[in-house]
Image (cartoon, rainbow, N blue to C red):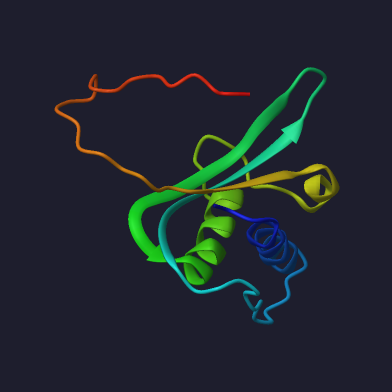
Length: 117
């Protein structure tokens, strides 16, 4: 359900922060509420390396919280140093909008579904 517009928005927010600009970035997508995660990665020789990831399982306003979690995942993920401006051209962004939750009896109550691809 996440779109290219969501990722572009996250990059705009991050670029604005790294450039010390305070102008407000406007969302170009429809307002909605979802649990969401914003992930930053860098490519390496064989795959991608996690650079930051923060989100929430609460239904939150997409535009407001994509902005918040773009910044938090880039600068406040305690597992990593803050993202620096020189990394920007190489960064990969992923926005995860969580849907289709189901009740579980415990943390082991799940089934792996094979991809149809």
